[in-house]
Length: 191
Picture 1 (cartoon, rainbow, N blue to C red):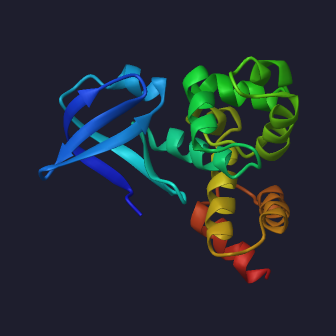
Picture 2: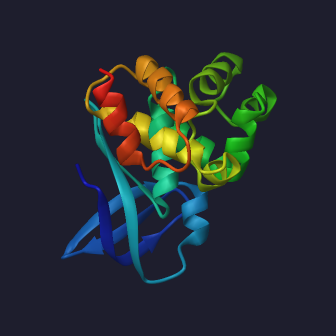
């Protein structure tokens, strides 16, 4: 997995950039949010490598939170890499968080390629779990903590649905501040 690419911005277009790193030019698909924020010649993009039968595609994001949103989106049936990139290009992370948290299916349907069924699936799967700094702050810090803990537990191969319930129970019982590590350890202890 290529976690990030850091180097000189050799070419910049609204849909992709080419970053030269150690004599190699990496063509990386980007969102319009990332495009609008690229100002300097030397850049570092957080990347996600998607391997398909017909191609290997590298997606890049200036902010790690946008990369995590992308990863959450592609986990939904009917949402591929290009569709997820279109969603992230059509809204800001804050707008996307608000659309999903308020069950705004019409807001998602405005995005090219998103129909009512896909919009419904996105809201169903992402409500309460979408990563964004805005969402983390809006939930008093617990939204981001919850999301990170669930992501770490599912990365260990544990089922997402049961981990969501377990983490919610832990956070509900928690008195005071808990770290992500404490939540993960407690969830693992409970089996």
